[in-house]
Length: 77
Image (cartoon, rainbow, N blue to C red; front, top):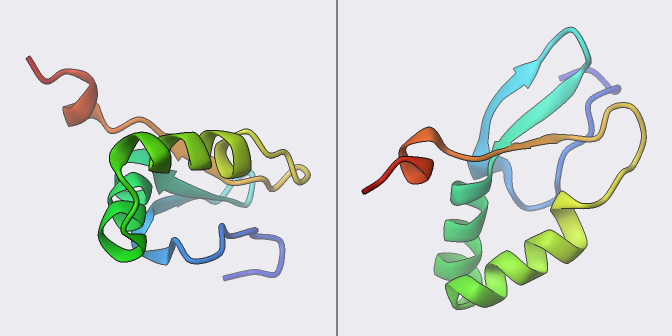
């Protein structure tokens, strides 16, 4: 990966792609939540709160990663 790409530390397993035009790594929000629940022992609410305040809302320049809502999670009935 080019030096332009910025990654969220510890969340490689949640990478679902890259935006090659804008040099941005794309993460699954659901996979990031699952990682914190399974690997760090957080409950779902704490994991979401942590990610909202410390990761998803952070702007670290033009190559800030993208965080996607998973389609299957959004449209579950």
